[in-house]
Amino acid sequence: MPPKSNPKKDPPKYQQIADHLRKGILDGTYPAGQPLPSEEILAGQFGVTRPTVRQGIAELRAAGLIEAMMGRGTFVRSPHARPGLTRPRGVRQDTDGRYIEADGLRWTDAEPPVATRTDAPLALADLLRIPPGEPMFTYDSLQTAENGRLRQLHRTYVPFSVLIDTKYEEEAPPPAPILYVAMAELGHELRFTEYVRTRMPLPDQAQALRLPAGVPVLHVLRVSLNQQGTPLALEEFQLPGDGVELSYGL
Image (cartoon, rainbow, N blue to C red; front, side, top):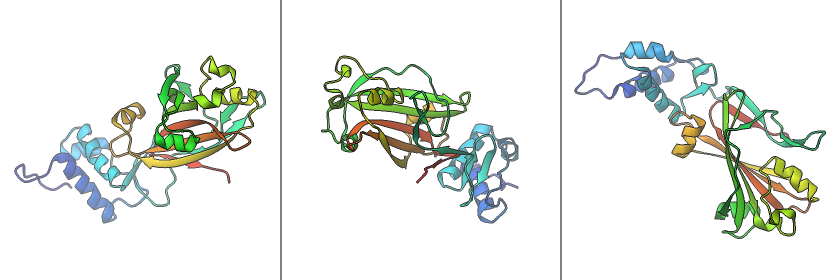
């Protein structure tokens, strides 16, 4: 049972909920790997609305004590728990020459991506081995899969210098993965390197990905290189960091 309320001294209701659940997790009332009470139960128990319950649960998620599993609910975090979704990483070429993701998911752009001109920031210039400030073609898109259940932010960067003496000096190249077919037609044999990091999302990214408070993003940078090891382009993925793991074949 929650403690009796004293309006003059008690913390906010969401904090009371977080403290109550935290105590239950630490004393074993809610063991690792087990679900927490539902939002409906907690709302009735504390006499609050469900958004207030979610605010309290967000405190525990930010502290790393719980995790949300897609379609299953909120669980006490276990060091051995598997996420709800495993996404194999990599690019493969199918029989008709298209480049497709190893996870086999069919991603749909919320809107057709449009090429814009941007200048290479220092961090990306380093990965692409170009001078900072070099102009690049850039495509941005919000992508969904499995009827909107999965979401990711996708960006393609192509340095202008890669396109010198090709037909793409006069027209914008396509975004990835169609870009890779275009690069192969220019005579490049492609290979790829990925860099994975975590960070907290910017507010607009959290909104686009529908992330609860306290959930980080997986930030994946994929560099495509030619047979000489020269970088040709870069893809950037922002993935929700809860309920998903990435797998790589070594």
